[in-house]
Length: 388
View 1 (cartoon, rainbow, N blue to C red):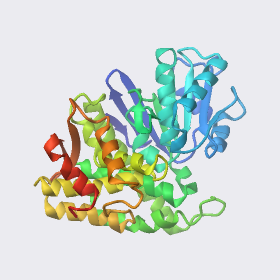
View 2 (cartoon, helix red, strand yellow):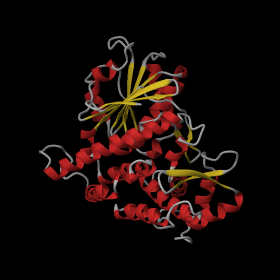
View 3 (cartoon, rainbow, N blue to C red):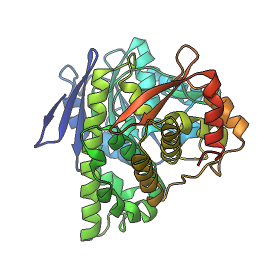
View 4 (cartoon, helix red, strand yellow):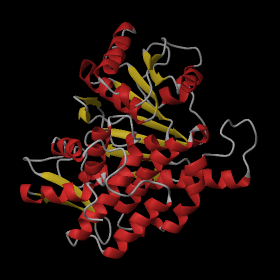
């Protein structure tokens, strides 16, 4: 990984695929995106923009009246399914796509995950670029190459590893996001900072001033008036935190692009608990970030019981998550039943050789642990609130 400090370009190599993340202020133009591909001719190469109803206006602005019609999908986790994947593939076929054609995803994690999956399997791999429009996408989903759809009511059950050639993160679009989306994305930032052994969690005191932003959003969400100095400061903080998150995640993924070792698995901190919660609550009921924040707290409980997470760090992490307005107590109010939670957990795709794996905060960073069948009851007790 190398960084151009002047333009905020991060260059990563994920196995045999290169990926550049560009943290910019404003939405990129169509010409900017195409220029990142040396072999693409803007006049002759078919391009398909994939978006949802919330990001259609951004895709239209980038497209600028050129190229084929947009592929517009339904918004939200419930649309992350096989039917949406087929819609993307059909749109590509109807646009005359070949392997040198370009998919451009404009949206959050759901859109980039599905578009990346479609690009990875279309003629065994087409060109791919992302314009990430949510904090969750910028902090996590758009970086590193994991693609997928939900299947059989299980989160990301089908997918591939296929990094986008270029990822654009226009910070100005965050101003239009509702508080719940900012809150969802911020949980992934907290997760990534916990993993960094060098940052000492980047000082929790820097994160707490953003509580008002997570609860109320930017004061001027429409952008029709000049933002006040307070919101400018919030935007600057978010830009820096996105940059730090991209750098940390990219470094981890470069070391273990397809999660064959244990490095990339660390990015699943809180996710075993979170994915089981999302499934047991009903996919789309909770935002991914809300579930991850809750999962991180439960991981701290597990780590404390196993003697891995120091009491002081477990308390520090859990207190921050609670102070930022996330639900931290177990059982989570959205959990339909502990039985449904455990069923989803035991189906988790992060198992290896039938053994459940969890990521636990350590004194610095985090570690991967394996739980045998005799210890599964401990997870049930934690999720049910019996080990608070």
